[in-house]
Amino acid sequence: MAVPKRPLTVVRRAAVAASAQGGASQAPTRQPPSVLDAIDLTIIRILQNDGRAAFTAIAKQLGISEGAVRNRVGQLIESKVLRIIGVADPMALGYDAYAMLGLKLASGHDPQKAAHYFRDRDEVTYVIFVAGRYDLLIEVICETHDQLALFLREHCYSRKDLASVESMVGLAMYKNMLKWGQP
Image (cartoon, rainbow, N blue to C red; front, side, top):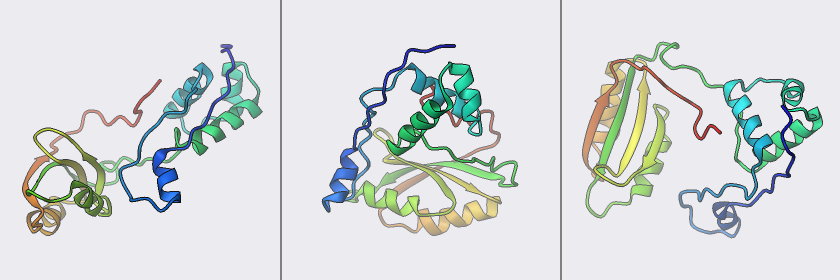
């Protein structure tokens, strides 16, 4: 499958520039590179399906050189558009307690501070600042329900900056897709 070639233009993120100048730590500003062509999007899709796909196989599929694939993947990684990681299924590893927590902050408390607190907990796999019923949504995965209960007691119910905690304990998982923004 031959795809027209266009170069990837890399842009620096505002958060990176601010931190280099000693600016305040805030949520990263996500700005996509100004140019992602069909080749880049296809490479991303292939690597989302198999992060270990060989550059030679990708190159053959796209009708371009292995070096071109290697350069493009390098640019995608450097620009923070792409990360290639290994992801284990926690349920397959014996982690049986899964919950999404909806957190409402007490009046006058900073959601960024609370988000940073939960981001640094080992049991937390996902933290997002949201608008709506909750201020933060976090995903927590523990080996046992007793450990999940302990996490709630120690890290949620005892915090003065949280007005309420709604625990949505998972009973069965039917889909856990790690292909966000799949082209």
